[in-house]
Length: 602
Image 1 (spheres, rainbow, N blue to C red):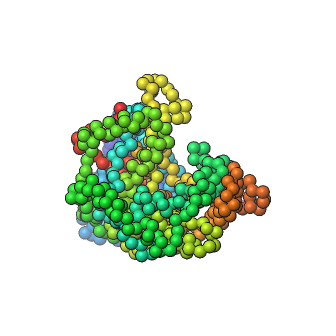
Image 2 (image 1 turned 90 degrees about the vertical axis):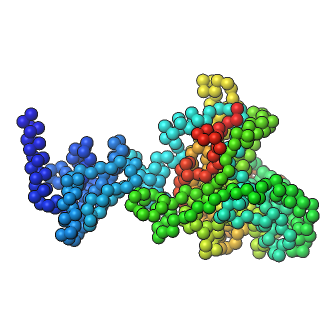
Image 3 (image 1 turned 135 degrees about the horizontal axis):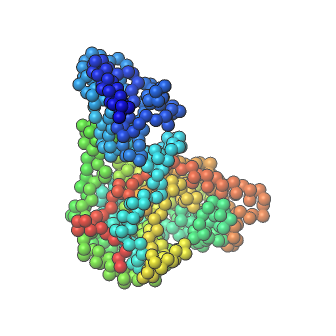
């Protein structure tokens, strides 16, 4: 008891000394949490020193804050200004009693002002905008690393269990249109430039890009043309040896050039401007069909309600992570526009009837994956729109058809009859008129219940046909898609210097990536596409398996292997723009409050 009394008297003496000095404190003071004791665990930290009493002090030139992950508290360090005036000393005097110990919850959105002339450093563990990956690589402690590192491709156990409780893990009827925004509604977004319903005249060859994807003109332009869907096969990247070297899964591998050989051997739709006009335009029956389709959608229905962006000198990514009460400005909105349509009980019942009519339980999982990618495309495009809108509200997303018809290489004989074309999912148009190709990939959550030999009868007692697989997000572009992005940049012209890819999941958020243009790789790609045209298409001889990898010419084989390795490097060295949390993805909500839309329609 005498020891405790001495400690208590010593504490009173310290408080009395602080009062006598009018709240003046030394230039280096560290505030510790009430439930913690001075430790020497950070004595080697470059920003924290320990004196001979074992008390941690912060260097005055470098200010930092650390977060206690176990106690969920954030330490605030008070750094007095270099020139403290008498007025500041009077203000500090009134609050010196609260300055000895100060903690704030890590979930708090603001820090308390302690004194004029002092700086409080508030550190929150938010999802950072990792543009160069330099900050995250220097973080070694797993407890204080950024949230992206902690949740990269994985949900926390608590959130994963909650998600599974709301959505059953097994089912027979996948809900393919789950919370999807239709393309017709996406075209009416205030930041989207849609294509016209009908093209009456082509003023130049490149105007064929005004035909919407899915139209018969768009399909006709694919015949005999090397598009992005056939480029990887024509380059031999999906052949077994090359695919194994790049880590491409067997489900995507093809042999003998796949369908690229049969696509390119067909006569292509090409000619003069007058011939293209006569073939593709001036069709009265198409006008009637377009008119009928347009009336199926209520054009008077209000779908979007535009929101106002906060105009500041800082980017939206910075302002959204700053404390709320530290700024008098309104909070940056999540989305560029509020979606007004909701899923009703009648629509959900219709989906259930359609799913049973299609008999999804007898449909291969590959078909379900393809339908999911098509239906969810507009939702992923909206994810990119909302993200880049926060950077600049003048950003627009352009809808395009097949681009590249007006390229000089398509109008000359240097390619030996090889025609190129690409249909990006969208084009990002910046205020300075620069363009970026936009490609989205939706990872389907439905796989066969037997996928991966996971046939546990206790988890699937009713022997359902499908199960939910939470796809881990990887901040890389799969090698099979590198040629697709490069051809899209090539088709948009020399001013397009990069392409954006959005990889989105149903329950695990999304990741936004940027691949920069590599003209040297594009030249090498064109070399091998011409070789495919001259070696196999023109002679009308189907290519063998591993046709470029196992070439009879040893120099050709070595050159091609270097090209394959370079393709893999490009996919792995892609720029990570940002990680989007699942709650920040704009989707359709249920009209019935507190009733989630299920992933299965059983």
